[in-house]
Length: 398
Image (cartoon, rainbow, N blue to C red; front, side):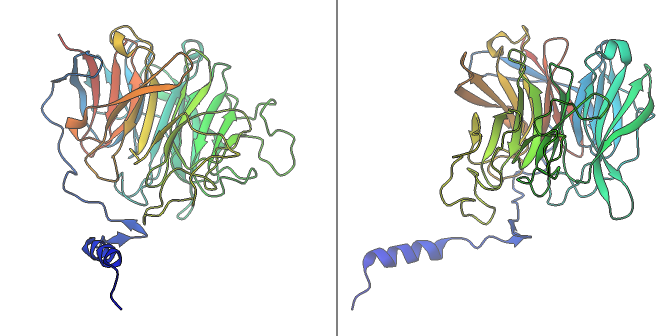
């Protein structure tokens, strides 16, 4: 009996595939584009909306900057994953770290499996001008084996942080973001196990009072077997939180596995599906679910397949880059699981916040973009998550 040609053809294709090396059930990342130094700046770029931009280096020599916050005088506080808080005044990076911040733990190069971040997100209190409160999430070393995410609060005295202390300590390791809502409540994201279990903190977004206590109107308050801090559940790796400036809704972006990155609009008590549903593939290749979908769960408003390792998020409301007004910007750490392909992504929505188009920016820089922020000058600032990391400014080309 002759073997059908179709079977021979399929077998030939299968045998032609490369055998990709794996480590800890994850494909070993290729190095062909990785670890490129930041090109000489400034650089100018054309963009899809016909708005030519220039990219300028504000500060360099920061090891893996993670997040930033602007002080009222325009100075910029920047956290690094190596556990430092730095300040940039009038475009000059102070050579010394800001004093008064807690000791942290970090490990493994950023972007590699098992990476642990020391300092992570930073936020100013909505009434910062009156109370001077600065908030920081970081990995707190409790002992040689236990290292959990903590939320600390202190006061800025113009030169240093004073009286900083923990106001909420979790039992979860991993990355964390924070952002204040319009009502003055603080949202805090956590990765970790058991995202579907409402009695744990892993894979949740929490909602806290500004002193770390639990708001009485949180959706799970008073319910047996449920943590009252929890605002939403079913998340994988949250790396961006930002309040929509028009609606006041809290938006969240989330890393899927190999594909399935999302932007979600957070609604109290809702479940966003992970790991029961996902549009992504597991790292060895198969779909995470046999039939991708979000039936019965809150669906994302933006989705990436393949993943861009989404990180950081900002709504642009300024006038200096008028053709981008109202757009959402997110950082990308790498695209399609290939190092050296990080970029800044722009998403245009209509009046109903439905996606119309998106654009990849700064791809030529080949940098891991960890965060994006709008400055008080109406310009955009991005942080590159590299060993020789930088703060970059995007401005109109002259």
